[in-house]
Length: 109
Length: 121
Image 1 (tube, rainbow over the protein chains, first blue to last red):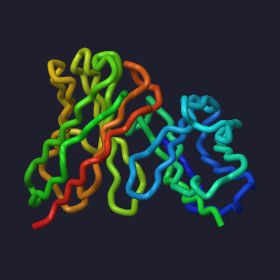
Image 2 (cartoon, rainbow over the protein chains, first blue to last red):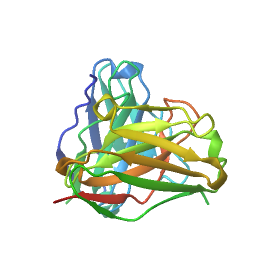
Image 3 (tube, rainbow over the protein chains, first blue to last red):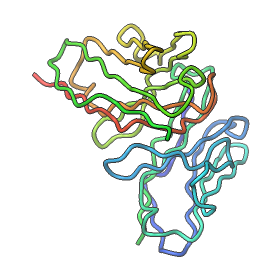
Image 4 (cartoon, rainbow over the protein chains, first blue to last red):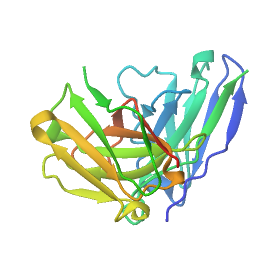
């Protein structure tokens, strides 16, 4: 089945840029979605279809993809961005159809 | 506003079944597929299955085939997830999530608040 690989954790200082990666075989050929989850809360969609941003999500959040890596980019990181971030793709050949990455815990120092 | 409201926490014994509901409001219920995702304590997100509220057709992750059933009641804009033969490792928060579209491939733009299911003897 299809596997998405994320770093378990990363840290960034306020005001800096966070780049959270999501690796997968030819992930560039799929649509990648990203979710933010704060402790005790449901996930929130922050980027969809690789680069699009839902209404209400700050412009500081953006996405990019290459052949085998998708990246969530958070510019001018704020304390409130501290959360777990998950990437997601739909893989019609996978026995799970929808696949999530293992998640990355972003700590804002 | 668009929202999904789930039923409350449940405690079940191993081998029992649980049925969680998810009531939708603020959008055309039959125009968007609904997904179920679970999260075990301290773990990541795991997709369970999806239902097309318009047709009632559903599909499930292979891991849950034969144990999970998704249904809907269009008259009250509610979907249900029933999981049978519960085991301790089914202990998790179960979320419903609305798709941006009716068919697969679209992101999940609205999530329910989650329902904690605890399986314990």
